[in-house]
Length: 471
Image (cartoon, rainbow, N blue to C red; front, side, top):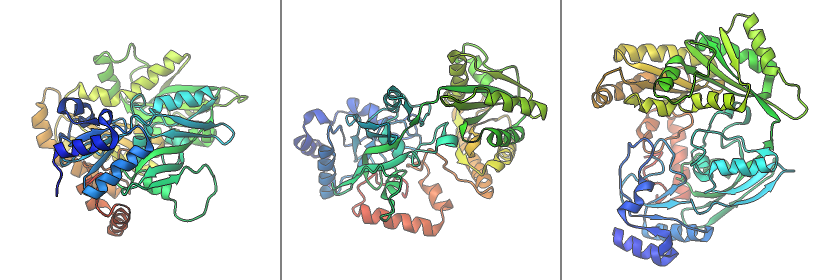
C-alpha cells in the first residue's frame, strides 16, 4: 500500500525525531528549487539525519515501504538529480553530516563527511599546509557527497583529475540500510572490484555516500596566473600544447573564454574593471603552480616563447591577489552573466582536446544557421576538452519564444557534432533527470545493460533516486 504524505511524515518523525523531518511546503522549498529552475515537483518530506545510523534507519524504512529516496548535498546540481521527479519521494539532506573526521598530512588524505561544504574542506586542508584541489564556482555551497555523486570536475582537472580521481575510498549506506565501510586510504589494493568507483558518479542511484577519504596535495608556495589574448580556439590548442610541453604537471588550468563573455560582464557591472590586456576575440586563462623551492617565472618564459612563435597577440600577468581574483571571477561568472542576457541554451559536452576548435567552429555555424542572431558563448576547460557550449538569445528576442523555437533543434545539432567527434554529451554535470532519454540514445546498449544489472543488484526495489540516470 502506498503511504500518504501525512503517514510518511508521522512514520519518519517516529523514526528519527521531529527536528529531523520537514513536511511543510514552505520550509521544503529550498530543497526543491534547483539552480536552473527547470524541475518543479513537491516531495513527501525532507529529512535531515544527524548520524549515519539515522541514514540507515531511513533507508531500511524506505526499502520496506517502497518509498523513493533522493539524496541531496548542497542542491547545486544542474541536471535535476537532487530534486524530486514524481512528487512522492523523500529527500535525504546530508547537510548535518558535516564533520571532517581526520586529516593525515603524511598520507596526504582527508576523511570528510558528505555534508562538508567544499570551501570548508579547502580551509581545513590549507590550515595543515595542504590543498584539496577540487575548485568550482559553487564551492561555497556545494557539499562533498553531492560533488562525489556527480563526479564533479572544476577548473583543476588538468593537473589533479576529477572527483573520482581525488577519491581514495567511500563510506555509503545501501538501499537496504547496510553500511559499506570503504574508507580506504591505500594507494594499492587489488582485492576485487573497485566499488568506490561505482558509487562515485552514480548520482545516488546505487547508495548514499556518507563520507569519503580524499586526496590532499602539498600547498603551492605561489601561483602564476595570466590572461592571454588569442585569435581563436585553434591558437589556444597550439598554445596549450606548447605550455604542456614546457611546464608539464604544474600547468593547473587552461580555460578559454570568448570576448562576448567579457563584454557581457562589463556591461552588467560584474567586474570592477577589464582584467585583460585589451580587446581580443578570445582569451585563455592560464595558471601554473610553484612549489616551495621552485624557481618563479615558468609561465612567463613559456608565454615569451609563444610570443616568439607568433601564437598569441597580448597577455597580462596577475601581479597581486586582486588581479588573480579578478581574472578568475571573469571565468567563474560566465554562467551567471548569461542569465542577465535573457534565455540561454546550455550544453556540458566534451570532445578529444584536438577536436575542440572543430567543435566550436561547427557548433557555432550550425546554431547561427538554425537561429539567425543567436549568440554562441562557448567557454571552459580547454585543457581537458570539456566545453560549456552555451547560446544566448538574440538581442531583443522574446525569451519564451526563443526557447520554444531553439531548445530542441540546437541540442540535436550540437550533440550530433559532439558524437561525430568522439565526445560525450555530459562531461561533468551528470545525467540526472535532464538527460535520461538522451543517455538511452547515445550510450552503448551493452553498457546500458551492465548499468541496469548493477542497479538491480544493489537496489532491487528501485528506491534510490528513482527515474534518474537510467530513467
